[in-house]
Image 1 (tube, rainbow, N blue to C red):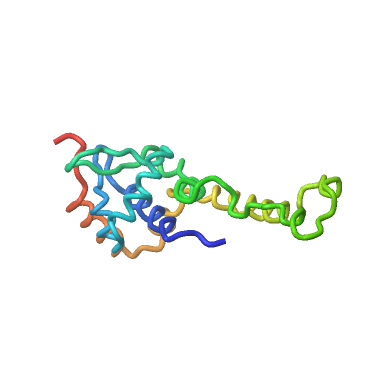
Image 2 (cartoon, rainbow, N blue to C red; image 1 turned 45 degrees about the vertical axis):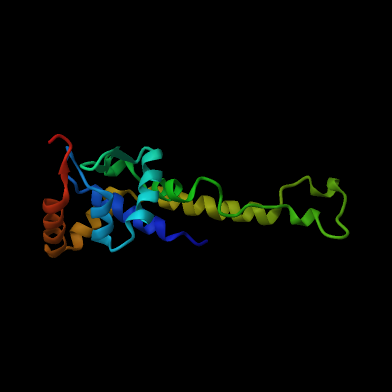
Amino acid sequence: MKLGDGVEQAIHAVAMLGTVEDGYVLSAAALAEYHGVSTSYLLKHLQALSREGILNTVPGPKGGYSLARPTDKISLLDVVLAVEGRAPAFRCKEIRQKGPNPLPKEYYKAPCQINAAMLKAEWAYRTELDKVTIASLLDQVMAEDDGSLQAQGCAFLEANQRPLKS
């Protein structure tokens, strides 16, 4: 399974937004600058996260993004599904019933075993992603930080977060 670059960018953006003070937002441009990615590409994923209820959007030139729910209520699966969509990665096209000489339909009453195996694997993958929250990721980062990451993040937030009310 291959996930697009947007998944990584979205997870990092959500994690960064998890450190923003209540009543403040970060612009898409600031998030993109911090991570060294394209603003327009990141915006597409921020909009998807907003549609799924993960982010709040404040429109306008002084607007930006904030989390719509606490970091312990946002899983990696939530972010992946928002960016990549809810459809399974593997989609069976029933090619076993095609070709120049397929067997009659009564031979295909049971689901395709390949499809069943792939869906079982995807279920396991999704179950594992659902166990990991943004809060747990932030806790891991903080536990391993010697203070450098926190200092860098605080300086960035101080310079870039915007109050909701000016």
